Length: 448
Image (cartoon, rainbow, N blue to C red; front, side):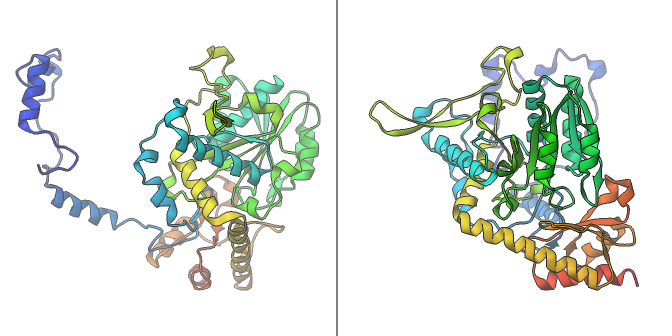
C-alpha cells in the first residue's frame, strides 16, 4: 500500500461492491443522467507515493512564515506565547484527543475532571463564581454573552465599545440580526471607551454594555467607571478579557462585571492560522442557569468517593427549543485541556511572572519607538500591545519585515479607516531585546 491513510485494496473494493449488490463503481452513478456527467479528466496532479507526497508537502510547508523561525509582533487576539512542553504530551494521549462528549460519567472521569479544573481556573482568573466547560472561541463567547443579557433583561439593545475586537463585533452583529437585536457602537477617546458617550447612549432598552479588557488597542479600560454607567437600570456589564493579562490586572469580577468572556489561546494553544481556539464564559451565580453550553460539577458516588458529572446543559437538544439558552451544542474540550495543563504547569506565580514580562517588554518596545522618532498614538496604561504610526503603508512595511524574518504588527487601517498607516504591535514574553530593536530599526530605515 502506497498511502498511509488510504489502505483500501482492490479486494476490499470488490468485497464492498459485492455486499451492496453492484458490479462496479460506475454502476453507483446510474441515477445521474449521462448528459450532466463530466466526461473528461479533472485537471489535478497524478497520485504520488507517500514518500513523494511527503517531500512535496514539506517543501510547501517550508514557505510558511512560522513562529519557530520568525520573530512575531502580530497579536490582535492571537499571540505567540510560551507553551510548556507537557501540554502537547498530555493532549496527545488518545483518551483525550479521541474523546467526544462525556455523557457517561462512569467512563469519562478523566475528561470530566479536566473540564472541572478548567472551569475552576477560569473562575480564579476572572474573579467570577461560575464558568462553563468552554466555547468555540472568544468571539462566539462574547456574542453569546450579549444574547444571554438580552434574554435575561428582555431588552433588545446592546452597547458595544468600538475598542472591542472587530471580528468579535462582527460575530455579535451576525447573532443580533437573527434575534432582531439592535447593536450600537460606543466611540472611543484616547484609545479607550468614551465614558461620556456611553452615558449619553444609556436608556431603559439597553440589555448590556460590552467592553474589552485590555481592549483591541492594548489599552486598559477604566472598568470601574464603565461599570457604574453600565449598571444604571437593569442592564448587565459584559467584559471580554485576555486571560493572561488577568495574571497582572484586577479581575473584572472584582470590578462589578456580570459576565466575563474571552479566548484561552494565550495558555498552551498554538496560533494555528487563527484556530481552533477555546472560548471561556464566566458569570455570577444569579446567571448560572442561563449559561450556554455545559457545566461539569463535583459530587460523590454511593460510596462517598469524589466524582464528576455533567450538571447544567441548557441546550436545545435536551429541552424545548423555545426554552433553550443557546444553540451552542459542543465545547472545545481538547483545547480547554491544553489551557488547563499550561495554567497548571505555570502555576499562579508563573502566570503572574509571564504577564509582568509582557508588560515590561511591551513598555521597552514603546520607549524604543518613541526615542527613534515614531508616534505612539495613545497614552495611558496598556498590556502587551500598543499602536504605532509608521508613516507609510503597513502592508508594504510588513512585506519588507517579512524579508528580514520578522512578522510585523496588525494593519489597523483594515478595520479603522482613521488609523490608516498605523500598526498594532504585540510584544510577548518570547520577544528578545535584539528582536525588538531590529523591528524598530527596520521600520525606521524605511522612513529615511
